[in-house]
Length: 120
Image (cartoon, rainbow, N blue to C red):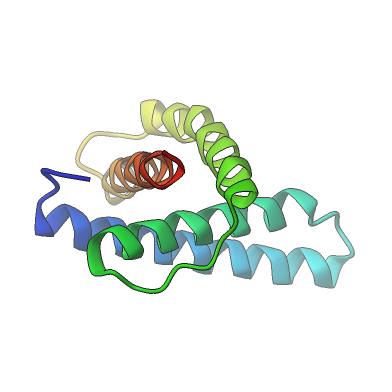
């Protein structure tokens, strides 16, 4: 994980923390409604692993996931790109939504790279 600016690091960490918060809220609301939460749980775990790998790579924070968790998280994170890219294409230039999606895509890409680095 070389050549990542401090600004990109901070924005990526914040983006993944925000994504985790949104997924936790979605999980809570879906649980209250009795909806199936399997997909949200998988995404929440994957984004949490992505955040942990970035914090491990950049800040040497403790890391506690098994190799099988990394493989699954990588797959789930890569599966998020098409829907984010679709939303990005539909959003208007200069809007906060477009900026949020740009940062989210960058953060997820860096998380996948960190997972790859840990897996090798």
